[in-house]
Amino acid sequence: MLKTTGLGYWYQDETNPLFQDIDLTFEDGQSYAILGHSGTGKTTFLSLVAGLDKPKAGDIWLGERSLKQIGLTNYRRHNVSIVFQAYNLFTYMSPLNNLLTAMAITGAEHAGDKYFAKRTLNALGIGEDLVERNVQHLSGGQQQRVAIARAMACDAPLVVADEPTGNLDEDNTKEVIDQFQQLAHQQNKCVIIVTHEPDVAARCDHQYRLENKQFVKLA
Image 1: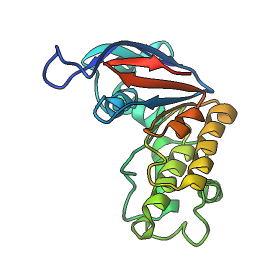
Image 2 (image 1 turned 45 degrees about the vertical axis):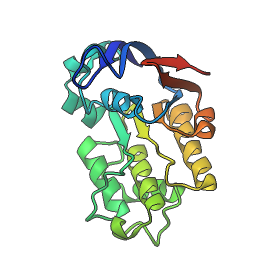
Image 3 (image 1 turned 120 degrees about the vertical axis):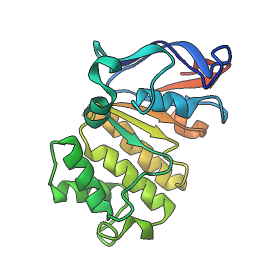
């Protein structure tokens, strides 16, 4: 379980925060969507729960331990998998080596297992003709799917994704959301997705909209 208590963030002026006094709970085995207009702070919130930045107020808890106790580096390595909007792949590697490297760094259960890595990529439409091709030679949508596969291949209990379907067509979007739902429901992970697409949000178990510096529960 992940929760925020009194969470707040601002850039320079404390009197004009992006959001403040945020108390939210995210359960294992569930998927969550965060909607909101550009500039409201959705990605900033995601960066906080992913351990990429520190809140200006309040705290974030994983179980009974705060991220301050766990340490952000340790938290990112062992507790969270991130799907970045800009992919953040190792551009000099193939999809297969991107997954194997991430699995080795995080000490995943299947570290070193090429068959598992290939199967994970195949499930997201990265076929045998692409798994060992340099990722720079893949389309944006294909690179996005590699980034999602990388998150899936690691054992972190929390998966966060920033606009994971932004470069995908309707059919691939459905497949990707199906995969995120499987992560939540079959692997008991907590999945948090920032999206501007209401149809994507509607597929998640819970939906929030960030507006007027607060999170409003939609479903």
